[in-house]
Image (tube, one colour):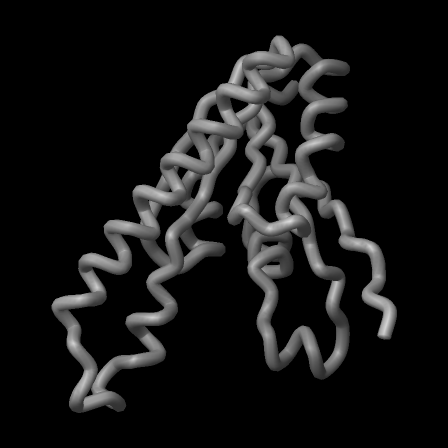
Length: 151
């Protein structure tokens, strides 16, 4: 039925909430995990032409450093999961996050991802990668909701 479990990770506690569920599913169905991290280019879109004094030469360096950090994070995570007896592949991409996740999906995938579970105005203002993936994925998506924040 499914051929692999895709787990989008960004290094946050919320994204890593998906790992225990993904591990359970991988073991239950004897499936490999595919962990992915997308280095966000949204910052470039935000800066655009609005900052005449902005040093664009630094953006390439920042994205390269962020990409290297992402690769290191995924490699460390991959090794840890393989140490627990799982089969794991990893992929780092650069671009809009939700689009990168969606582009990485293949027939037979099953996505397990963490979500803040924001609603209403907060979701509208902050946006939701998880919601975009859920709405546009051509494969099943399981959302692992973060515990509600206490004020």
